[in-house]
Length: 342
Image 1 (cartoon, one colour):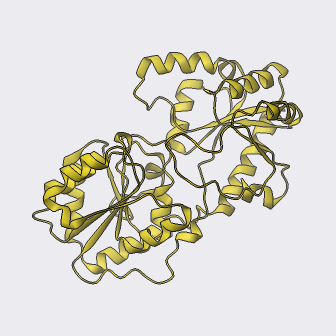
Image 2 (cartoon, rainbow, N blue to C red):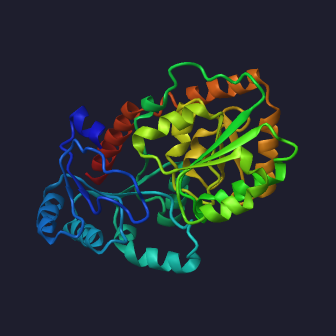
């Protein structure tokens, strides 16, 4: 959002529902665009309503919050340009109940010609199926400043050791238990593998117990804030993102930008969009311990030359996933949305 505001051409105002989500430890960064953070402050709600009423286009990225839903309903009733921007729907555990709830909450969107911006093609495929063809769809994934992950020197793959990094919360949805099982399965025959968990979560004690037999090759370094991440990426050789489901997954482009081939799953938006199997990474089915173990075994046998080539491919694969590209994608979606509405 900072980059969009700084690029000019759009008078951007952002209403954030919360300064921090439950269970997240990230430090609030400096925000350099016009914004409000509600955090339940009723005094800010009138300003947010005014911004939504005055906007030439209102983009909604959430519908389960009561106030966000009120604003969406308000815009729909006025029949002035608005759109919805979100990750893939229907990938949580709630199944048919979630579908019914979503149909009810998004009934205004179903009845409206409003555009839908999907966070990646993985999201758009589901939106097209659920909302039909009588509207426009734009692919507007998450973008971040990948330049901070760019290694200053080529990564050294000499020697036999292969260092695997996991970066994220230590929770079931992220598939860390699958990674632990796969690592245990191959640890004896692939004793050149090292595994680092970067993050925190309630599964840590279970993971430590599960990995006790190979504990000398496993590290838990805890949570690290934004500025601390690149250093850990630069020490690794491979990034593993074994999520059971992830609407996008910013760690995937961050890992690729760091020169790390990435192991991702077929239910992670960024992995599907950015990973070319056996080129800059590998794709596995979520929850499949055997597939992940096979990939880890393959990695343990890769030569320094093969690793260097995969690393080079990884960096090249996100050259066009820069902040500047994100700004262009955002502006193009705004223009297309307004043109279709008119």
